Image 1 (cartoon, rainbow, N blue to C red):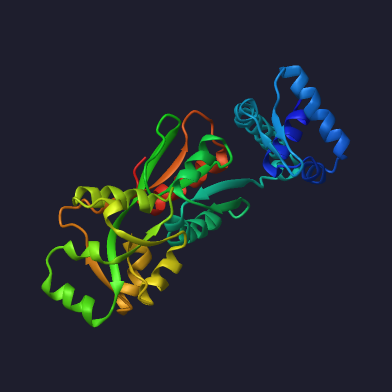
Image 2 (cartoon, helix red, strand yellow):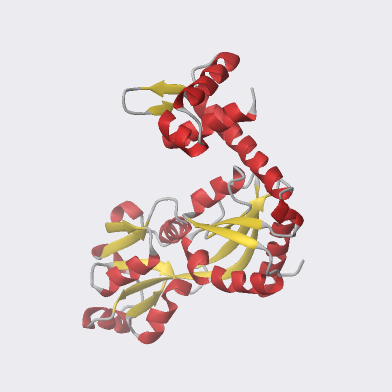
Amino acid sequence: MNLKQLEAFVKVAEGGSFSKAAKALYLTQPTISAHISSLEKELNVRLFVRNTKEVSLSEDGKELYQYAYQMVELEKKIEEMFSADARKGVKCITIASSTIPAQYLLPDILAKFNEKYPREQFKIMETDSAKVVEMVVSHMADLGFTGTVLEKKHCKYIPFYNDELVLITPNNERFRELKETQDNLDWLQTEGIIMREEGSGTRKETERLLKSMGIALEDLNVVASIENSETIKRSVKSGMGVTVISKLAAQEDIESGAVLCFPLSSDGSSARDLNLVYNKNYQISKSAERFVKVVKEVYGIEE
């Protein structure tokens, strides 16, 4: 077994095609096929299920993929560490972030980091909290930002920002009357609800909060699940429904009167931490360590 075989295996697994893997690696398709065949013979397993249109991972292939990917990524990191740019002090940090930190907090952090370390580079990947944690655990990302706490076996979470979940509605006569006359949210179960997508930290925290209020998600009229918070806010303003959202994300629209804001609790239960996360079982790079330090400086977190 060698890294060339593993690299070919990873590319076929990700692209679902021998031809795509060949193109990505600048090799011929017979060379890719030979690498996979040798790997299957050496391990005495079938790694792919083949049909006329595409290939997919077998159960053994799925098990191998998580280790093969890490080995290929580790090879890249070693090459990057000892490349000409690295020797000149140019580094690249890969950061995975859920929507709210990515859109509303990371820009200021990145500006501060760039000011202190102008030679450092970063790559930002925006996804949901569940995928952020997957990427940190599998070394696809050096650092992550999440809106909830998920896997703890491999991950260290540093809470750096205290956010609040609020309910926002269209600013119309009916909701203005509800805001003035109602001191509870019993009416919520009769409204169309817009939710974040599965895997989102905001969705997980919303479900937790609703459960604490005695409201089950299946009892609500969920009209849509949307990934992008800006799209959600526009949908609320257009009258499509109401939503539970980060106050950080909705602050501008609340202050301008574009939407109405209803608090979800008076006891602090609607608060949630936004977290910086890294793999505690893996030595992060010096560049990533410097980034963590900048986050702590920006938000006044003591070492």
